Length: 540
Image (cartoon, rainbow, N blue to C red; front, side, top):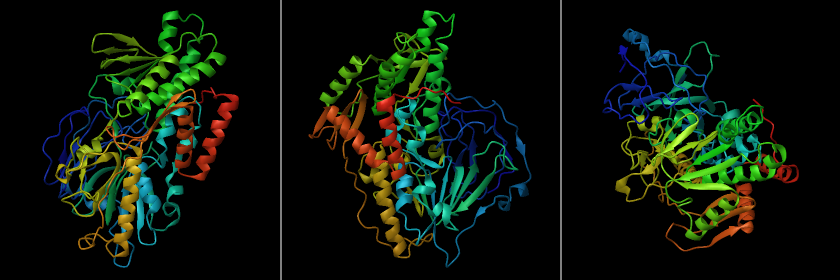
């Protein structure tokens, strides 16, 4: 149903509550969470309206923008368009597949789940269209290493066209650099907005894509818990461009602190690196930073080497999912390496300091926020069943109930309560395992002529998805790591810590890197760093 008038009065916070979902039409919200255009797609969505032009200077990354964030203007013009200006023909795109053509699978996202799914998809059966605001997959376990120069950024990024070559070579398969802003499950269409900085004749440029099967693997966003100032002043560590920004800020602060006339107090603030969150990402980043300080800063920034400091703030215990003995080992090792471990809860964040709940003020020069992830604003906006925690609700076969031909997996999906299964953690191995399962399910459906829209109702799906945890690993710096091979937090199993664990950690991740090209890059980078140290060039 077309809108004749859409009024919007300003930005709403991402923590804001939604009004009831529209049963017909579209509700459009503008959020302070950057780079997302959030559309609640009702079950009878026919058209999307033409929105006002937005500043696209920011980077888009699975719904997460480069931090620190900057706000959009606080008001937007009311649009008053005639009914026929929203005619569906104004939306270019791919129409529904015709009889005799291969069924089309549309994949939203390029994370672990989406890429594992696309890698195994039988393109003799299906055409595939991937829609994402980034054209590569990020090997997130090694992302912290790129912030300090242990690895180059290209070593952890794999173009999706190399993961699924059909996206580049098949005449009816495509990759679109865009974000999904709405889904019409009745008409089997998704509506998208391109990622652009002014190079297209119309900004923002929107289009639609019809699907036979839809796979939502749009990922998640960092949790900020509504704490004031986090989005404006903290850096997240989820994307390659996040790591680039952290690296530039770290090196900039090192060089600025050497300028004449800088007070000792200001030097200490500039060189104070604060990490919020004691999970694997926060611990590994702290370990990498301590390595960088003890080996490279001591040699190349001798004038300020005594001022640089790393503080890790965690509300409870670090690495809470690991064995108790491993947690204690990590605590002792990080403390020995100069990382200050502090228990506390952040109350608010300012441009040069943060305030804890007990009133303690902590000045900082670099603030990295790593407190877990939650549903993105796009996922929240979809009028689909939700699991506990706000993810898209799925059944045992990763289907979204109540709608046809829609599947969800990865960090954006969770089992519904009625399945009797817990919501799985937002881990790479969970997403990868779900992608592997779902692609086998799709290939099986396709071989039984169930690939077209509304044609899989009678196709047997086989065994449901079952997740088996393979263990956890984390590096803590200085050639030490933790390996916890227990299948659950309360189960018994092998736990290792030390140099041998570090060798296992490196070997395991080297074999898990997506391509032989990137495995070669990673191995060469590790060898180069071992022999020559980390590169401290600040580019950009």
